[in-house]
Length: 196
Image (cartoon, rainbow, N blue to C red; front, side, top):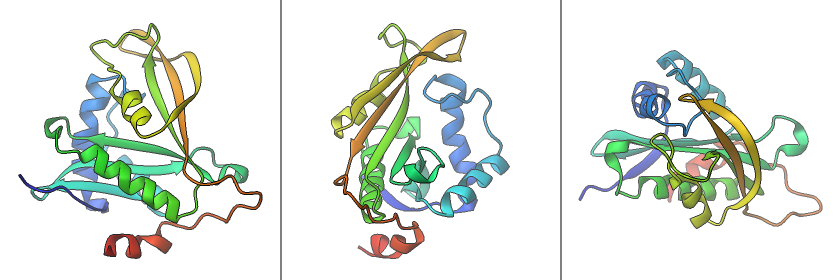
């Protein structure tokens, strides 16, 4: 079986990322977007993220089969130690632990960058029952990795003619120090991380 490899995303990956993401936009309630972003929009998002944060892709047999990135949970300065995570895997490539590899890399990078809290904002069925557009895979994945439920918002998301809740899950990955070290930029840790 081929091995999954990770690397920093390149702007030239935007089309492949769009291909993976388009399935989730068009066929699931996992993302709150209802229109697939253009390659140009994805490229712009990647540029913005990579200014300070990791944006990773997973490759299998030379093809991009997943992507993951973090961003600020809130742009205001006092939130700077808390990030929000996003991970998407090609639906045809499940079973290769791609999501696991991407998540492990993001968490290690977050530690090296001196972040303290990782969060995930997850669409959740209002009646707690999965449906054609939304399973419970994402909250279960995050729970497996030690995330705890931090809050639930009642019917915040409307997609496919149905209301869904939004849950926030969080994980502390470092001590909540009295004087936390300022977070580093991704560029400050990327070379050492990928040299391992």
